[in-house]
Amino acid sequence: MSRTVEQIDAEAKEQVGNDSEPAGDTEGSTGSSDDLTREISRCERAEKALLMTRQRHRVLIESLPIGLFRKDIGLEGKFQLVNQALVEMFGYDSREEFVQADMADFCEDPGDWNDFYDELISCGKVIAKEIRLKKKDGTALWGAFTASVVFSASGDSEYINGLIEDITERKLLESQLGQAQKLEAMGQLAAGVAHEINSPIQYVGDNTRFVQESVQDLVALLRRYDEVLKEADVDQEILQRLEAAAKEADLDYLVQEIPSAITQSLEGVDRVVSIVRAMKEFAHPDTHKKAPTDLAKVVESTVTLARNEWKYVAEMHMDFDPDLPPVPLAIGDFKQVILNLIINAAHAIEDVLGERPEGKGAITVSTARKGDSAEIRISDTGGGIPAEIRSKIFELFFTTKEVGKGTGQGLAISRAVIVEKHGGTIEFETELGKGTTFIIRIPIDPAPTLQERVGARAKTVRFLS
Image 1 (cartoon, helix red, strand yellow):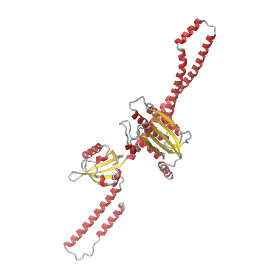
Image 2: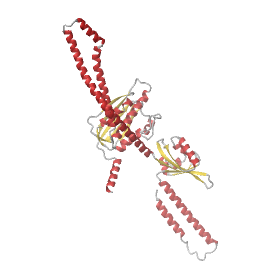
Image 3: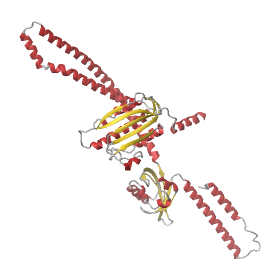
Image 4: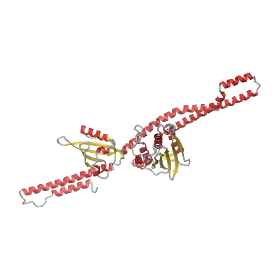
């Protein structure tokens, strides 16, 4: 915009002031011609002032950072006026192109506009509502609608004035906050459960190991008894009775299977211990501040915690770089990213397997150093991502899952966590029929992110104040 509102306002005042000065010496002028001249001059000044006022209003409308519109009454009423912010919000190239569309075209569900319009017309007052919208290219966004009906002096509905604000970013932040609150609640629950399980499972483990050692001693003693009896001069009837008792008790089977059963029990105990450890680590208080972290440990504990999601559909393979140095992580947020990706991988494999319970896919999680970054790869043997939706998968609320199984928030939040909080990148490689690999790269020695610079600046300002 070449001129500001203040400049236009000043020009208008100067112009009106100049037009108010006498055009010349009117002495001697008489009659209606002088009156006509003055009336014409007054009308010209009024017209110029009106034009300048309209121009100021136009500049004000165009300078608004939110979309503004005026449209005819009716569900398919045509647009009378739109500002550039609204045109750009929906990804159109020009106003002329934009005004050819109906309002319902911008709603993900056209029924949302129908409901909004019916409520607006019936109540006759300002109505505000949040509606899921879509851009010209199909990209989803959230909009806060505010509109009112303008009535004529006779009380007839003339047109609708409205505002649309893009609140997609706010919705993302609300989703992140909701996730954080759920994680906090899960963390508290997990910490309590882990604490309650930890002590009893230690008793079980210690006692089972005691039994294992004792059984080994008993088995050795029984074998020694058998050797002594065979070497000693013992009545054959007694030997036969002992052999019959051993056969009735199935002693050979017990000697062979009891140690195996105890070993399997200890494996189960160790499994429970690893789950409890993962729960405790997941529930560890998280300040959302980055700290040098053992990446493999964090990933492994998250994989363990998510086991119930993948164990029925996939084999899990982990390959961690032992030489990878500690990586600065906001641990709680990073775990949520890994959890999202593993669950998505399991669902992708499940969709391919369908009703074939005998088959399993594979999920591979690996870490490695790539230059100055730590790289995490999470691969699945699912069906891959179709080409037509690859550009949308990181959009907030975009999902291909059935209702109740996906919210379309996981990947959007994951991208925000990796890119904005960690200064890293997240991308994917995919092949239809083969599977998908998500690739996360996080700087090992990162520069401060924008969020951290803003936070540091705010602290400095408070300190100086």
